[in-house]
Length: 450
Ligand SMILES: [Zn+2]
Ligand SMILES: [Zn+2]
Image (cartoon, rainbow, N blue to C red; front, side, top):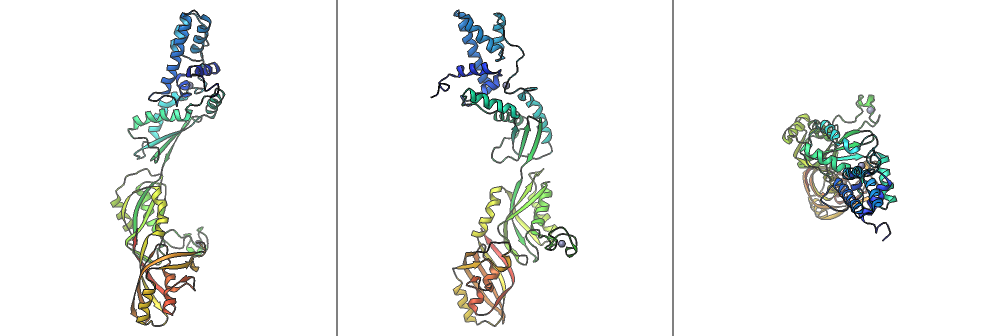
């Protein structure tokens, strides 16, 4: 233990007051982590009161010099009323008009709390939120003063100005708002800048999960910019800047953004189907993220109806429910682990014998597929070999050169390439097993099990 650590709270407090004027709260805050179920103001007052009593004891015991110097310290830099009364009675001189070194520049930052609470009520009035958090940016010079003072006096259990302010501000605001403070995932954060004396309202995003079904081919999952102009607009794209006029993310995201009165949306999905592929069954899981929503509770039934109406029945959503960021982040990894079922129409170059078809089904049951990134997506995915599990394949001949197939596969399997073989990049493949080139002419996702 160093010499400083050996000092009592009263000895430390005396040294602090000898260095600078400190109000009750700021003196108490320098011992803020000591003791519980109290306040910094109470800590500061208690210390000053005991020191005043000590001074009194000294005066009564005849140690007038020591007693007077303590009273003058408490009445001056301590700004302590009981010490001032006693000092005046004893005609002891002390410095008048001192202001606290740690909370006062032109005014005391803590005195601004009532006014700041009023402003906070004002800026949050038109926003719907269930809980909140306050934050603050301290005046740098005040924060530095405390750090320096605590360092010089080896004060080890001080609370910061910021934390002290936030708690006091939050406590009063909570009472006025009648809403709980939430530390982990607050709906809104109200931040007070002490230097600028300004308040900022940060509205945190909200998340809605659900599943979508895509009932028409030719719709990409996300907005696809025109390849000619990169979205700037050109003759090729009729100055729209886009390759396709619509997208699933917009059919879901735009009505959601409008319902929540947000500023932007982001669409997260558990994988994606190709533009020409239908998504049926119970649909594909997604989470839509809405930035700066003014409204947090909406009627999910009307949003469901609105998506269907806006897309003219091409996109349907179901199971809409409040969600969170973790679920949105979880979707990607979920997509590569879940089991998907597909229905495909397959064209074969030569007619396939029923026996060979039956054998191929056997050969594709419960196997590990080795799939190198397909040629057609090489430009946007890294070129590597992925191992995917094929659970079950059902093949039925529909015509001389047409096979109907159902595939139960691990998420992330490229089914079109499982059929064609992609020039040997996917093995085994249907084309390889049937001994004739095969192409997938129509594909539908019929189920995603998650
Ligand atoms: Zn102070
Ligand atoms: Zn263009």
